[in-house]
Image 1 (cartoon, rainbow, N blue to C red):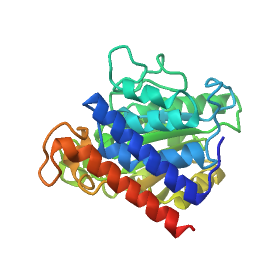
Image 2: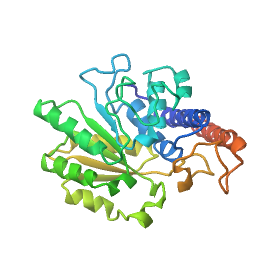
Image 3: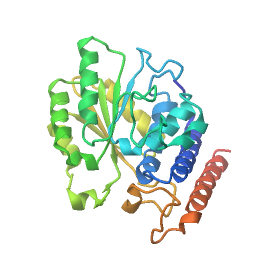
Image 4: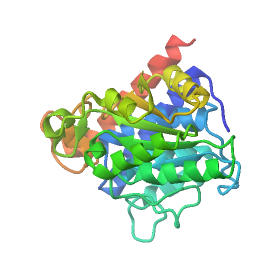
Length: 295
C-alpha cells in the first residue's frame, strides 16, 4: 500500500493521464474519455492508502479485490498498475498488440494482478458480488471488494440482478464506484436511456449511496472510509467525473469515448498529428499550476 499526499496524488494523476494518452496514440486504437475521467479515482485507490495490494505478490491472500467492469477503460488501470510496480512502464507501449499482456480488454490469465476478464458490459458487479459473498462465507472481515463500473452499462439487466443479490445478502464488504460521466458510445446517457433518479434506484435495492466529485482525492478517500464503516449494506459511490478530464478538446465530448489521439479528425479538435502534443502540453501546464499552488 502506498500513501501519497494530496499534492502528490494530483501530480501522480497527471502523470497517469499523460501515460494513458501516449499508450493510446502508440496503439492507434482504444478509449480516451473514460480512462482520463477515472484517473483520479484509480490514483486514489492505488496511491492514497485506500487499497491493500502487493505488486511483488499479486495473488497475496490479504489483498483487496479490484474488479474493472467497464473493461474498455483499462488503459487507466494498466497505467496505474505500472506506476504501482506490477510491471515496467515501458510495457505500456504494447497495448493492443498481438501477444501483448495488455489486451484491449483486461484478460486475467495474461497479466498478474487482474482479478477478472472483462469486456461484456454489465457483468462486473455480479463478479464482484460473488467475490464479496465468498469472503463473507469465509468470515473474512478484512478484505474489501471494489468494483469500478460505468453509468452507461447500467442499461444492462444483469447489473440490476447483481444489485438485488448484493443488497439481499448485505454485502458490506462490497463497494461499487460508478463513473458518472453522463456519456456512452452513442451520446448522452440521459438521452439514450435515462438513469435518473440514479441514487434513489440504488437505495431502493438496499444500498448505501454516496455522491462525490470524482476528481477530488479527499472526497474519494472519505467516501471509501465511510463505505467501510457501513454495516449491513453494500455501498455505491457515484463519482461525478468529466470525460476526457484534463484535455480541453476532449472534455464532455462523447465522440472521444472510443477513439485515441492522433487517429482521426474531430471537429473542434486539433488535427490528428497535433492532438497528442496539445493534450500533453495541457496536462503539463496543469501540473505546473499544482506545483506552484503548493509551494
